[in-house]
Amino acid sequence: MRGAAIAAVAVPVALWIGALVLYLVLMPFTRSALLSTASTLRVVVSALRWPLILGAGQAALVAAILLAVGVRPAHLVGSVVFTFVMAVAFVMLHQGLVALLGQGGRILSLALVVVQVVAAAVVIPAGLSSPAYTGLATVLPLSHAITGMQLLATGGSLTSVLQEALVLLVFALIGLALAIVAATRARSRDLVAETAPAPAGGDVARSATPPDAPPADGPRTPGALGGPHGTRGLTAPPPAPSGA
Image 1 (cartoon, helix red, strand yellow):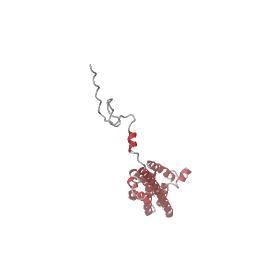
Image 2: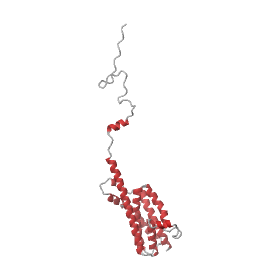
Image 3: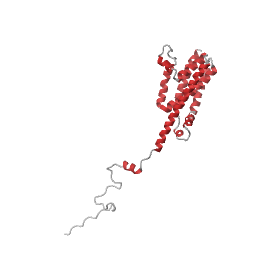
Image 4: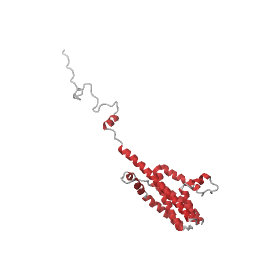
């Protein structure tokens, strides 16, 4: 039972970090997909295919390792299903964070690991932790994941587990909404860049030429003939010598 209690914390944290690692390697969506004619929702959902497959693979690997080392939660099947729910929710939430905040989303995710573990009363008991951390537990996804796994490990109410799973799915939808907002903004920027008028060729040439630059055909000699319509490059003959 002690191993199941430890796994109830280790599995959600491992899957959260696993989702973060996926989006250190993968992009939330590609530029080519943004420039396509597909709808924004389709672009975002299509970009989730490989991250979700890899996240499910992480969940299966974690479950297999726990079974291999002899960890047996009270609700074994429920624990496996809940593990996949966590993987899906964390992947979708990270897609939204990274799509909207970029590198800041990755840093925020890493910082939230410690905050969420403390808020879930894992490191510090609930009676000794700050009320601020206790209040945060209701609005942080990892806290709900740890609570659900603890209920499954100790044989708690499956109704309560279902509630925690539904909360995780809400966080997944929040991540999807953030990704859609980010993709819409990216498409708007690309549209503005494409429709911006290009500067006229003459203006570019004039602006690129320094004001004190010599003419393109080189400086004229003092004896060069021709005005606006004259012939250039011909010098006037020297004056005849005066008679002796």
